[in-house]
Amino acid sequence: MVSKQPLLRRIVIAFVLMTFCVSGFFSLSIVAVVHFIEENLVSQELDEELLGVLQHDLANGLPPRLDSRTQFFATDMPRYAVPDRFIKAEEGFSESVDDTDAFYVFKRSINGQGYFLVQEQHEFEERETALYHAVLAGFVLSVILAWILGLWLARRIVAPVVRLANQVRHRDQLHHLAPDIAPDYADDEVGHLAKAFDSTLGQLRNSLEREQLFTSDVSHELRTPLMVINSSCELLDVATNLDPRQLEKVERIKRATDEMSSLVQTFLLLARSTSNQSIEGGSATLAVVAQEQGARWGAMIREKGLLFEMVDEGADETRYNLTFLRTVMSNLLRNALHYTESGGVRLRLMADGFCVEDSGIGIPLEQHEKMFQPFVRGQQARGEGLGLGLSLVKRICFHEGWRVSVRSREPSGSEFRVFLRDAG
Image 1 (cartoon, rainbow, N blue to C red):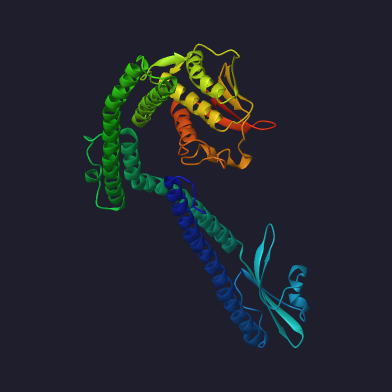
Image 2 (cartoon, rainbow, N blue to C red):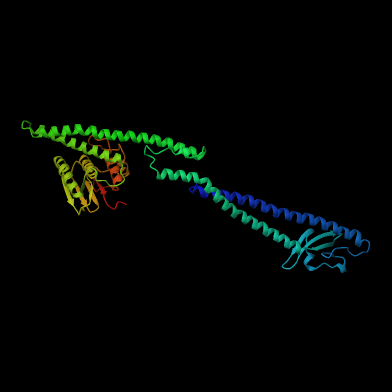
């Protein structure tokens, strides 16, 4: 699993852990060497000294010739009786330490008798304790210094990465006049990262430029023929020599032209991707847009033999982007018309948004989220669409900070609700 710790912290932790392991190894090595020297060299010295006492001093009837720190005891010599604290000492070298005294004890057994050489080592024990304290203090100090040095080095190492991140975050990199970042860095890993960013950013700029040119061309090139078609339909509409069927066809062409003009405006606004809620494309309240779309789609819903109802449950007077709100409501009403064969469609206006209810075939629960993906249509697809209507609704809601949800109705049908305010 990849660590999610900040890079600077990971460098400091690695530096401290390395110092902890290395310093700890050397500290333990010092303790082990001191213990080894103490046990082997002192043991060898006491063994030789005890043999000298037994073979030379006592064998010649002389008292043991020892320094003031060393004493001789023997189990078979009352003159050199063994103190109780040493009587149970193990064979060979051992230590006897209490709160006030510390002794080296060396025991040798000959013919069932025990001979002891005891050397006072209180001063050495103090020095040994001081050495251990010094080793421990050095270990702790090395870890603290490693943390301080590691933090300083980590900041030096991470500084170019932080600088690169700040440049990427705060500069308008998508602007064509923005200079490349890579020349500001050395030919190292950070420099290579900056070069990769410049290369990717160049491709993104080219792609964005092509998209902007495309949307601009589409918006300008399509508006002219759409205006021509629309004006032609108006001329045909006032003509007196058209029968009702022909007038119906003209009206259908006019509705399709108006819808296409609205979609062109919608796609153009989405392509510009402004973060604020712009009034470009007009603004209107929810009630005004509902009246417009209710009149338009209500007639077609009734022509299909369905009931249409619009209920105002307290729509507020907030003004929203007319193009976006019109497109969202139009797509949801069209969707309800296509997938409802009996019953009716209801448009409910509320204080925080609106809701489109139908008594159609409904949407299975497992497809609720998929229905908002591009090119996804219901299992019983209706109409001539490509499955982009709900996807467009989702994109507009995301762009404007709205929220759209769907749920099934009983016994059949669906409910699409759009939250225009307080969308969490």
